[in-house]
Image 1: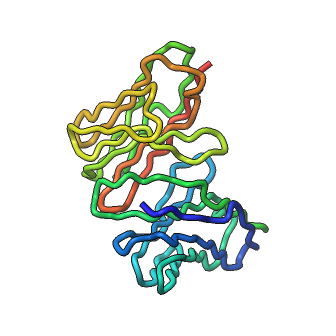
Image 2: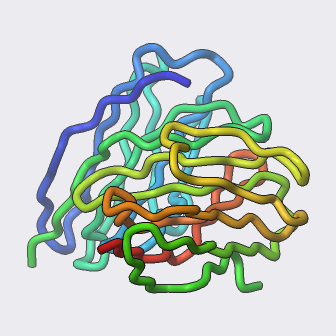
Length: 111
Length: 110
């Protein structure tokens, strides 16, 4: 699985859009970009994933650059409950893959 | 659906004691995993099971054993607990790229 690089920490004002970047310059053509988050003391929670096209769901949007070497997770209207560690992961999803976590980005939403 | 459930939620052991952490999922997923998370650190994979009857080591398997009892259940056993195993243990299951995690077991070894 390709290595991903994320900033260690970020702050965002409540109500504003939180934009979390991720670099995955060695990603292969069949690897998806996944985002999970972990709110304090809880198990990680799936947010969104994508391969090439931008994706949106009720939680967030995922913007993947055309060369697929980087992506951005967007939380459109951040709330205090979005304070968490956010993990960007590149992997195949053919089944039975091992999900491995890096250190992620600690996002703090400021009131 | 309950998703992924883990028991117990909390446990305190003395060094050298043994215990089994239980995990069950009701989503008919083939793959199941055990992770540990030390304070301020990321999750590290202990063992995983790609399907019923198979298990494989992850990053940090030493000191642990696992059993994939059936498709639903995947247990983690500490035969002789050590203080270095004080951690939060998360069980997970997956199907085609989507992982569901349990609430965690907080284990303290004194």
